[in-house]
Image 1: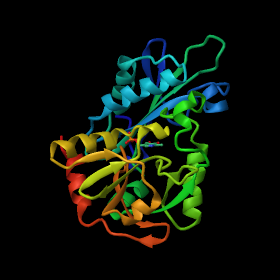
Image 2 (image 1 turned 180 degrees about the horizontal axis):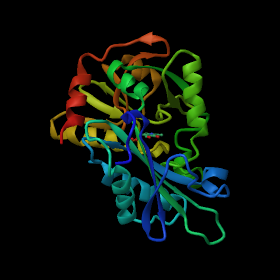
Image 3 (image 1 turned 120 degrees about the vertical axis):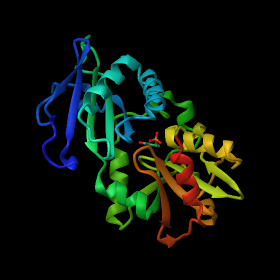
Image 4 (image 1 turned 90 degrees about the vertical axis):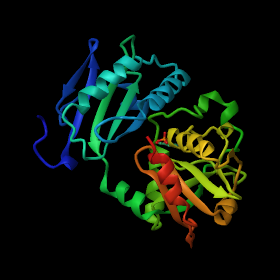
Amino acid sequence: MRQAGPVSDVRTVALWRDGAAVLVPAGEPVVTAFDQGLARGDGVFESVAVVDGGTPHLPAHLARLARSAALLDLADPGEGTWQALVDAVLLDWRPAAEGVVRLFLTRGPGGGAPPTALALLAAVPADTLRQRAEGISVISLGLGIPADFRARSPWLLGGAKTLSYAVNMAAQRHAVARGADDVVFTSLEGQLLEGPTSTVVWAAGGTLHTPPLETGILGGTTAARLFARAAEDGWPTAATPGTVDDLHAADAVWLLSGVRGAATVHTLDGVRRDDTGLSVRVRELLGRP
Ligand code: PLP
């Protein structure tokens, strides 16, 4: 067993090297400093929840990873490689704990060298668990692009989960500096887009809504799962081009992502809001096997 300390200290790394998953001690270097993922954020990634010691939603993440890689003209090493990397990092994981596996695919050092593929395992941060349990305060911030621009601008990589998350992280820091937890991005015209690491979902008029993918947002695997199960359950769903005013008027608002799950928005731009009891139903739907 590699784990000695508490589960929150567990950090495991597996690198794809010469056709096999190789475990690397967490404190040791894994890639060359010339890796284009480091130099330019030129790569893609996925964050996959570890539930009961397994990764039940891995297939949806691998499908998205393949789409992201294709948008960046990166060679995806394929499901077998990713599964081997996930299996390697999960070998000693304690099933009772919640974890997150991050999969990275970068362009590597270039010059004909293969892309870098690796998996990291860590415990879910305490703050993420707090936000899931207690809900979140969110501010809206403009992204400065028209809502229909990214879908017709492939160089902007709309819909790809790229490693270039510096803007997303800066937006979250901006929110924290203003006393909030997270952000909803809006387009130039004020249309809802997404959170820096989440999909926006709201309930209104008996329907669950989320912004259309034609805005160039990332297609969230958690929102897709929720919508599929809600539809099975007779709860209508729709891709709706909403605004921040629609969120203020909604019965409930959530930011959805694989690891945090459905975080109920209890405050939007400084205004307290309710969830009319709907978060329980959303969690139940997401928790179904
Ligand atoms: N949108 C963005 C920009 C994200 O980074 C993420 C997750 O990291 C999501 C949405 C939610 O995706 P998922 O539900 O697949 O975790």
